[in-house]
Image 1: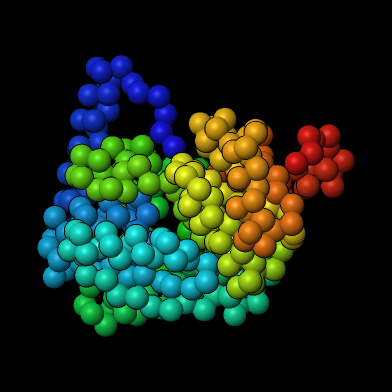
Image 2: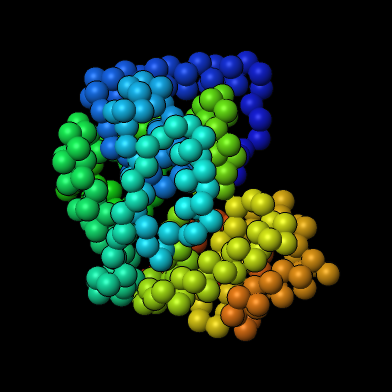
Length: 299
């Protein structure tokens, strides 16, 4: 989740850079005057919400949660708890992306259809309430990956100030810790649909099975980054390196497999490569290269 510590001098220099970015973010928000935030309770949107509250005050900030079967219940509970803790006004709306056949088919640009649904519901609310700008928690690191949802944000006039000001994930975690936010060390948690290989239709049943399996792994004591990738009756579990060492053999391995099977999977595979954000993108690239006649290592 976090890299090795930097030497003290470099750490202080980096801290000064992130503090300056935070001041720039506060100025950016003050210039707009009011803001609606696509709020999931994750590391990025929580930090953005806290800085916005400090910059323009709770009366001019609204966090909007889009709820659907792809949004984990545990994340919703944590998001609501944090909102109460920091004084963030929250509005919840239901989104219906699973009933969009383009989304449910789970193409590689699935996130575009999800975000189109979210922003098409959220931006009118912001306008009705007189909020000057709609923002999301996209950061500078996100711009380097496969992010089809970013196009939907642009089409609806949604702005990404963290990315615009060059905030990396590490800097957001650092500043979150400095502000006393519990999310500073929270594992990343994208939507549950990201656990299904592209082309596997997204259904409520599949999402619930993934959610139950990941909740079961948390219950037995796994606290770091994890993913349960869904391959029909088989689950492929990815754990952060330190957790992988603790759970890959012996009685611990049996407990892990039992927990995942109790969620409805018949076979459980523990990925020896560990947790990797975007692992399903790797699988897609491998298949594409294989179809083109390239030699690739199998998944």
